[in-house]
Amino acid sequence: MSHQERFAWVHAVSTLLVAAYFANAIVSQRSTTTLANVDFQIPTVIAVIAMIILMVAGSIGVAITTAIQSHLRGDDEIHRIDRTDERDDAIQRLGDVTHQRITSVALIGVFALVAFELPHAYVAMALFATLTLAELGRAGRRIVAYRTGA
Image (cartoon, rainbow, N blue to C red; front, side, top):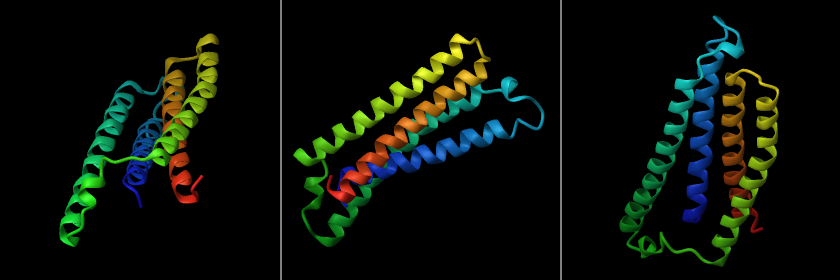
């Protein structure tokens, strides 16, 4: 498994963990209030910050683990961590295009929520869902491309 694929897995797992936290934080409030009146500000800020921290920490962890494994095996893989080739660049672009397409389509729905003046909680949840879907789409597309060679 290439380093770039490992990083894609880190992004996918981080996004899923944060999305699970966010969904739990919102759904747990449903017993006391309506969905339009849930406290969404703090869970949204925590979720976005947690996503960034998990992705950075996970990427650092992958790099450190690779370095340790390389040292224990005595091979020269540590010097290849930062290297990318044309295939990596193409897969990176493919993931980015997928991210942009998902974001573009999903934001139309968010703009519709704003245009119809729905509660801010709906807009915030739709924006977070857009972020989550776009990140999962990007990571998923990269993983599939690395696995299938597409």
